[in-house]
Length: 338
Image (cartoon, rainbow, N blue to C red):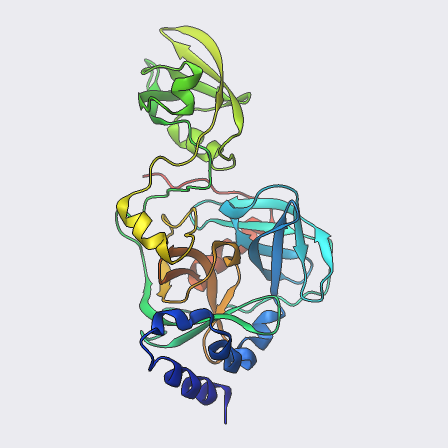
């Protein structure tokens, strides 16, 4: 019996029960898919930050280049290979629209993945998440084909990053040049308000780096976390002032987010991707970044977000391949202009 037919037979028996939504990570259900992920497993690694598991990674070049979920990276990074060896890692570049980061370890002769197109995969087809070990990490079906996101899901919101508690807009000089990020409004309990900033203050630098506009300010905050302290230089009625603010977490979550998270933790960044392939697989946020295959073992993309109670989003191969060369060259891409 082929891996495809064996997996289908066993899973069909499993989903006959009422608790079909919980089959994704059931060991008995995952077991038949071991052969399906064998090749992809060779290209899957564990990403660690400060000695804690924070994500999975997918090897894309044999000489130590690995992509992973950028918004989960924090602390001193290391990569653990499937044989248990662990290496220090450094971040070369990030691509904010896709939430991918390219990290590098000093190892050669690794096994890179070969990406296959995702757009022709039919709804209802089985998908399997590879892990750094030989077993399948999770299984599920395609619940919505590859598609671009629409409002509000197309807006980047990263709950992992630090927040100043402000709504910034571009401030321009008399010649129309953007000179900073003007505070249009601010939350009373946010880090900016507590530090003494006011409405109409114009933030011109953060930690000594110029912030020519709200897009630049937002991009800088992507790399910071709640609890981090930042030095802000602002213009207030033409006078330059300096403040020290402590960043906070995302404001109170919506009712929908609370309901979705009842099935487990959701990814901090789960919106704003250029396109996604949707599945009902259940994975933990710390297991995003690894490859996803069909029953023929073809890598269709990488898990990019646990988006709901039984909803995981895959970043399709079509959105990964075009940016690999720039990421490898160390070229980062900030948030897209809206």
